[in-house]
Image (cartoon, rainbow, N blue to C red; front, side, top):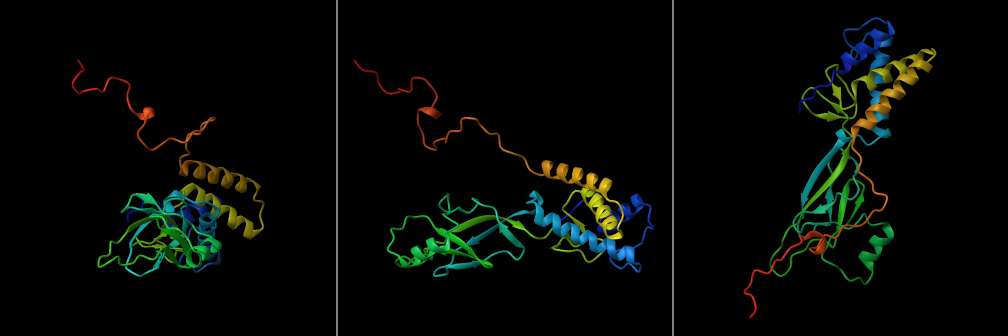
Length: 249
C-alpha cells in the first residue's frame, strides 16, 4: 500500500526545525528527552485525531459469505465501528435490517413473529450476528454474499504497508494531513514545556478545520425534500406516443 505522506521522522524534524530546536537523526530511537517526547506526542496526536473525527481515509469494506447454521461472523481485526446504513445483501440486492436493539433481538429470538425475506443483524463484541440463522432448506443451501462498510483503527501505515494504531519506527507514516500533524506536534511540545501556546493553538485549529472540511464532501440539500420513488411511473417515463401496435379501424 503506497503512501506519499512524509514519515514520522520527517514530520517531527520539521516541527523541531520550525521551533528552532535541535534536529535528531531518529525519534523512534532518540537518545535525548526532546526526541523521545516528540515521538510520543506524534503518536498521541494521531490517536486523538482518530477519535475526534471519522476521516474518509479510514473507511473500508468487508464482505462475508453466510454458512449454514452459523449465526455469528467475525469482524475485521482493524474494526473501529460501522458506517451506518451500509450493510447490504448483494445476493438479493437489498439492505439488511438493523442494527437491532437488545429488546428487538430478544423479540426476534423469543417471540412469535412473521419473518420477511430480509436478514436482520446486530453487532456484538467482535462479531456480527444475523437473524434468521442461515439454514439448509430441503436439501440445498443458498449462501448470502453480505457487504459492510466500516471505520478502521489503523491510522498508522508501516513501511511494509501494514496498518497499525501507533508507530514504532521512524519510517512509519499516517493518513492525516501533514500540516495539521506538524502544527499539532508543535502545540503539544510547547504545552509540555510550559510555554505560551496561544499562537500555536490558533495555527493548529486552522489546519484542523481546513483538513476536516476538505476530507469529505457534503450532499446537496433541498428546502423541500421529497422521497424519490424507485419504481417505474409517470415521473421517470418520457412524454410521447408509445403505441407501436396496429391501429384501429
